[in-house]
Length: 421
Image 1 (tube, rainbow, N blue to C red):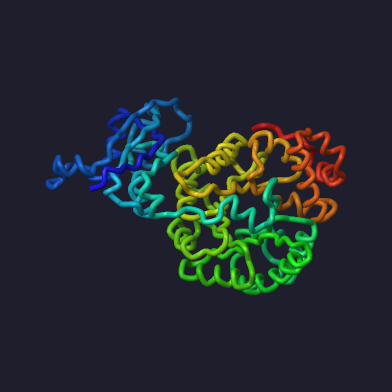
Image 2: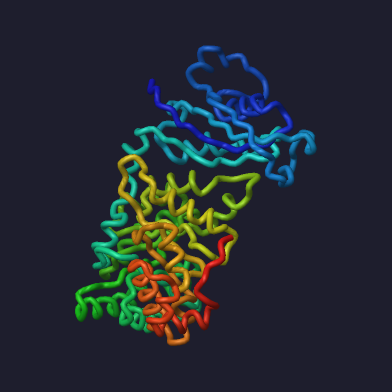
């Protein structure tokens, strides 16, 4: 038997003694049930039972208890707990790992809150799951951008344009010097703009730009689909010269992502759509820090983190934590690209660079490029000028003074300063 362990970190609330609640969680997710059964011997428990490593009490979050909580809501306590699971219970299998560390525990009625916030995985997982094939360096090589921030956009409108209309927008973006373009997560393989038609309309445009400039912008076609169609969709893109595919990780599942990774010949742009359904609440779910480790092991080369001053629920501190998590080493896997999106525009460049201290970022501006007063070319130039200014050590006012595209962006989108939230 292996002696390797998976250590899962949770935040729980309960009206029970904290240590007892932690033991209930550990038992429910390994050898235990609501009552000791005949064959649950001491020897079996010693070999296979999950063990509570430590319990650290925390202040209450002030949120309401989960529905079905069987305790006194006015007498709750909160704690961070660490639980060790024998690897022999499930092996180096991400689907079966999740059954243990994030299975029925969300339904334990003694808990008024339960959230998986981190995972420490033994080396057996990186032996089975190879992680990203391209990551930062491979993406830069394919884009022809060996240094500097990588600037991209999402096709807007998100949905509704024909393949030919989309190709016209791609032509404008490529001419303006964009590094990366992607389908919106809403644009899959619908009847109005099938994947094959989009690929056949867009790739000749990018090839013409590559012939003229020596650099081909990367286009991530959204190949999200049933698992048995992923390879066919991927192969279609590659056969026409595509250099990236996009998959909505939570729609195809981590097993689907790992399946795609084993067959992919180009980087996988990992979109995190639906993450909020299990990561947003303080009371229940899986935190981004834990989830992103599994997405990286499963093969994502790029992973969305949101950006500062975004249009969604996360604070700047949470976004910066997500960027740091994605950039943190994960055993010996290839470093991947954090993807900053959601409400990004030129006015956020200086603050973002100051707070991340890196240009190993893929920054996507949708409305910030497509909504620029001078058109998509003005949007691309505003992003390029602002980031160049930030990297030179200038402040936002200097960028405003030296770049007409940045000034016009500021006039449209509301000033250069970012309020910390």
